Length: 263
Image (cartoon, rainbow, N blue to C red; front, side, top):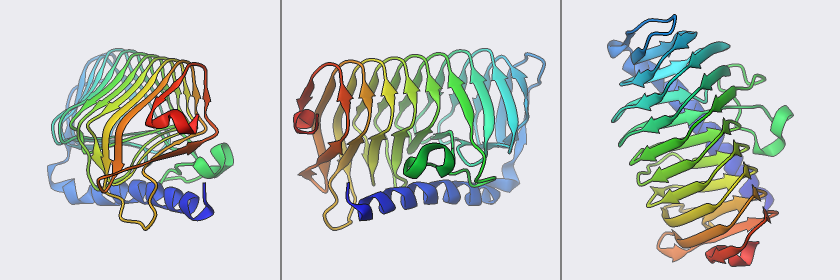
């Protein structure tokens, strides 16, 4: 990867975290929360989700986690239509026993870590840049029509499935441990990358349309992943032109379609 492209990737993803966190006060008029700890369910309508143990967490507004927060969810996390879960701006420990689901128009950001931990693929925390998240999802991460998905340095026991959606903020799946499949289909975003992950099964990327106006933008990035089965790519484009780039991937199965050349 060219040095300029590496610098660009790091800059835009760091900027994404900064924009989301700095934008939070704009929602202050509607902040509030509900539910209870000690194993009860919790609904966040805005602001920080308090440390605690919850059965299920539902996010219906612009919600964050605090620096050093510790959350244990014994059930599911659901990010509702148009809501925001920003757990990628401040380091926190979050354990989710079941699934994470984000609905149309939602923002989902999970995980941050400093360059000291991951090198130039880092996604530094906006709050406490030297800190890092410890986030695990023991089920699936599934999104449908979300505006943004950022998964950075987390552990997901089963599958990641991202269907539709997109917006002006670059999407990233990087530095994660994913036990099952990664499937991304029908996403329209400025930038999209699958980087430095360990993935247990298949990676399927299809109908991803990017709007990166940087001269020479190479399209979808697939870099230095360990993939336990096949890498399958089709209909990947940037500004309407087929585009995918990658190197350093270890693929136990086959690289198929547009990704055959980057195995």
